[in-house]
Amino acid sequence: MQFIEKYVLYCIGGCVTDGYVRALTGSTTCMICRPSGHPLFGYPGGFYVLLFYGGTIMEMKSLAAELSSTTYPGRGIVIGKTPDGKHAAIAYFIMGRSENSRNRVFVEDGEGIRTQAFDPSKLEDPSLIIYAPVRVLGNKTIVTNGDQTDTIYDLLNQQFTFEQALRTREFEPDAPNYTPRISGILHIEGGSYNYAMSILKSNNGNPDACNRYTFAYENPVNGEGHFIHTYMGDGNPLPSYEGEPTLVDIPNDMNEFAELVWNNLNEDNKVSLFVRYINLENGNYETKIINKNK
Image (cartoon, rainbow, N blue to C red; front, top):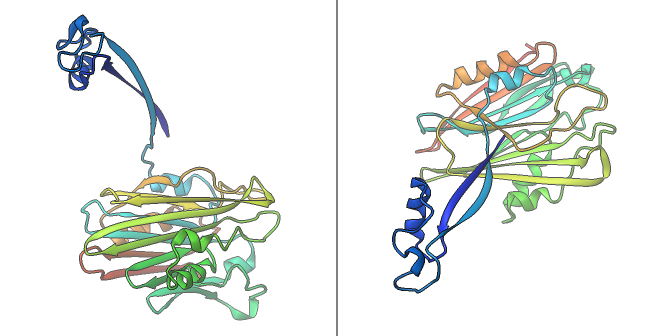
């Protein structure tokens, strides 16, 4: 993210339009009111004051580079829009370091998916690893890294909002990592499209406080997406994700997108990937699932 500075010369005589023009030309006196003041409003002056305001611009990152920059981003969500503006794009992946975490596959479940044990005889603790990452409620698609998918689905059905639903949850209780709960929701209706992402995490590893962040993206820009994941990288304890979701590139082709994500995840730790492209005009979708365990 880059901080930018902007300066505007504003005429103290009230000539706003002229002020902007003079800001561009570099003049320090107003061509309309001069030192005598504004001809209609009578404000004194005719000179400019310098106004300063600042902001940030987010640099688009290569999704491939972001994925390959660490051996263990954990679980991750990418949501965006294709360059041709025709499809919403979703990716959700899981990774694992333990045998229990790696013993999983994605399977389709109605319009969504769920995780299940690849070898049921090796399943140790199903909590936190067996859940429905993706569910569909009408024109809304929910994607998360835990059973908060069900929480969001159920409370949306009761007219709660995405953010209100997540107020009932917090980070995972897997001390000392306290894995963040990451969630996303896409709303597609009549050709319009918006999405939101959320992360619930401990306060710098302190489980006594839960930090809640929601990021909403209205009228997404073609070719842009956002990527959020659970960990900044490998470690003990695992460091929680920091900052806003990363602005990343999204391709037009779903298979290309799936290959990009899968091929740039760490070979030893990647487990499963779900990708879906949703047609913004009619709501039809295509899905691709890749499982390491076969």
